[in-house]
Length: 372
Image 1 (cartoon, rainbow, N blue to C red):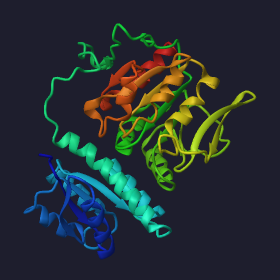
Image 2 (tube, rainbow, N blue to C red; image 1 turned 180 degrees about the horizontal axis):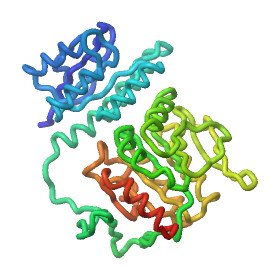
Image 3 (cartoon, helix red, strand yellow; image 1 turned 90 degrees about the vertical axis):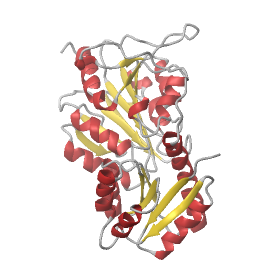
């Protein structure tokens, strides 16, 4: 018998409560447990109702989405929260805060241009989120073979797990290059929270540029960049067309557009464009990663973090042709172990690192290459 996810829908408008109720009812193995018009009512219903996931509106009277999320995190940490956000700057800023506080994902409200298409997109995205949440919530212990070796006994400064290659697989580069000229990152579901644990912990004198693709629509990446910039010693910005790629800067691909790099004389610059989506994504990690090797050769450090799907795996494969060093976020610290898993399944990961140790490990690798 399949386990059913019980969903609580929280929105101050009857229209959206109805839209979301209809969508959830059409998703296999999901059911609407209850609805509420604000956070205060929702929290009261949780005392008497079994709920696995909350679809939570941002702006509501009496108790808004952020306040409700904070209480949910404290009193109901096992309940997954998906933010339901309007497509405007104010909602985007609040949504980023919610994601950094630990909300699983967000879904944009229909924009009114093509409501049926928007509803179909909502249903597809919620179906994916529910599937991954269910796989964690109802997972049964199994004796499956791990793709990583058991953690060796190491000092706290070097606590990471090298990934094992089976004898029949050509080994990937286990020894990092002499030095790194760039760090490239791909991330999706769970990304804002994960990035807020990594980027602010990197030193301001990392002395290499960082290029980052986070799957998000327009407006939201600007809010994400602003939020991360306030917390970080590196300069974090949403990338713009023809930006000069400089050390100690983090460039986030703008939502809805691809980001690549190219050589312009002695400079490296950013190319922003609206090419076709790849892996159903724009921006796509694969698009960025393919553009890296022609400019930086083997001196590349790649990192694939939490996210649904496989975007980034083929990009890492292209980087490996010239010899990059590949990190992935560990399964146990991912919200969704999709993108890192895809890299590991292709035997392309050199290390699997727990989220709290990623910034430390990146800094260690980069500084070791500079003899520090």
